[in-house]
Length: 384
Length: 124
Image (cartoon, rainbow over all chains, first blue to last red; front, top):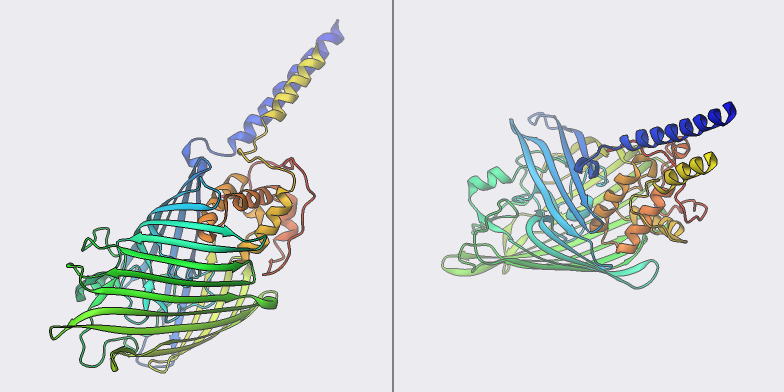
């Protein structure tokens, strides 16, 4: 009888202990909606030095937290903020805030403010722990969602809706399609340009005052801003798309294009086209992108079009933890007909990275810019 | 009687083991390893499964589905692979070695059940 009682108590104790252990394990994860909130992101701290005695050497830093909240299997809310310093002010930028619908096998729907898939660098490669150099190429400049004075375009982020499709061809290959409609660029005043044309906090900026990229000649080219406001300045919307072939992970080829109008009366066109290639043969990584923009404007009562091409080529190779990288880029002279209207800018960047961890590169780069002073950049990027 | 009580409690515990709604089918983990190696290194160095909890990986893979334009199936099996290899023992081994591009991951032993692990990890 005593033995039976003992055994019964043992069983109850074992059952209770098991229940307690399980409930403790479940308490590790917080209950409620916060349990599904995930924080990821990236940041960097950078030191930039120049040999020119008249220019200061600067430290800078940025932090870009990404907030992710999944609601069931098919809905994802995601947003990225950016904290940085601009002059004497702390800046906060909303890089994207979007809802993703994942209900279908091959197609996704995105709505909100998103990174525009024009080319590859702006959408995929600009975070400081992904970008192989501490600076951005001349194609997609330092400004983010703002005004690009020293590059062809800023990193494009805009409010609208997007459809993405993965059209499978085999185990490794697929056609990659993105179509979007968004508010598009808008004409900005000089004051607005100063407010929104500051450097992207995630990438180091060049010495101020260099001559590349600005208007030259007899034309006064209006400044155009992207994603600087949720209120559009006209009824027109930007329509764009990117189509690519992906042979993962060794080869990717994309063509992109967009059409928009940027003035209040929807008369002035702003168009762009880009070709992007990424190849990874034998551990080498080669990235090449070229783009052209066409900006219509009025000059002495006539409609004129500024055509500006730019490109960059980047090669890197990882040797265990060391990674040499070189990038050559050119913002070619913008022309109206045959007349020069926008200054050219060349850039050669040679760097060496040391990977402290899978998402923590320490990057040292020497940036040679014939139109400005050469610059040494040291950046610690981190992704989390 | 007592043995039945014990067995019932044990069974209840096993049934209630969290799977995060992730249905894992035969072949998923090997496929997930393949898609992880092929897609995650297209833009950046691949992140290790031990860096996050299973629950966090499910959300992060959904985020990366949009970034890399993955199919629903690809995202699902990559999540299955990350969850299956998210073992505390592996932290000590894998954290010291950084995976590089084109490096094939070790394929885990195929199983239809998620290996038991404590919910936790480095977290968000």
